[in-house]
Length: 405
Image (tube, rainbow, N blue to C red):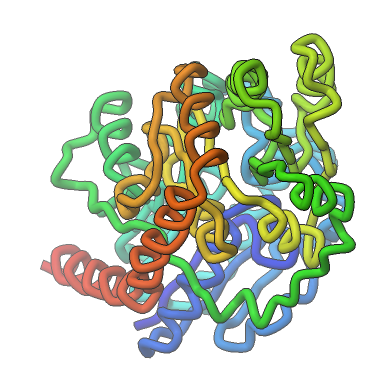
């Protein structure tokens, strides 16, 4: 089948898991026989992507679109009636250029299905559907309710999301949590939505050789008996990091040999730095800033426990990456990845006492830590992008038949 794939980012120019998921899904679809035209809003090289045709909707470079990432909608509070600016300064202008490009592209590229990822590409997906009369699949990796930490967020984004969900022939949700949110917050019939969990590609991480010099001081502390609890994420309200730090402080009141690694960056950075100081644990919390490549992989490797403290996490690929790097996992009940993993500790994101208890339990019990690390590996290795591609192909075919009749 010929698939028009509409995304906002691909590795190595990605700000989170959306680009990673789009890349591996497209690769698996290509291996299954699909022909893929993938549209991104910027111009850049994408190594190891020869299995599909990548189209740049604008001449922007990745650095020029900094701050126009897939997770920044709550920062753009434009009124729904506001006309997009005429310069490439705002996300609405980039989206307008993206829609225009897709409108021109489908005059020559005739897809069998249109697959649009999240709100940023929905308007282009609708335009392509109107132009070609082929089915539109909207793939929901996160809603504005998720990005805003269960708050309402940006009303314009809600309007775009709702329009796309109504216009879509079928909707893919990355978890049952996300499906439930779409049904109850947007009033979409449940039978229009199919849950297809994300997967994990072990081979993509390569033969990672851990460089213990990257986090040398943490390695020294581990030799002294400390346990490293880490998270690798964006510093936004969605990720529940304020609750994480409060739990860290509670844990340190009862068990001294815990330290915490927060790898990443975002709008809450200064607030989190101040909170760590106010809680009296500034000497136990290490902020790396944004990490990529070797530093990113080494952050997983130095950790003993990985914490996913999200207020609302549709899936959470970082938990699978952490499991691969030999971490015991603690994830919030509000994280979709918990639907495919059982050998983890779970808690409600606001329950700082329970999170503190779980961190201490893993830190003081080597056997518990060993069991959690080993058992979760049997689970994540069963999750395959090839299986995701098969389900997507089946969905494309069924929707194409329905539209044709």
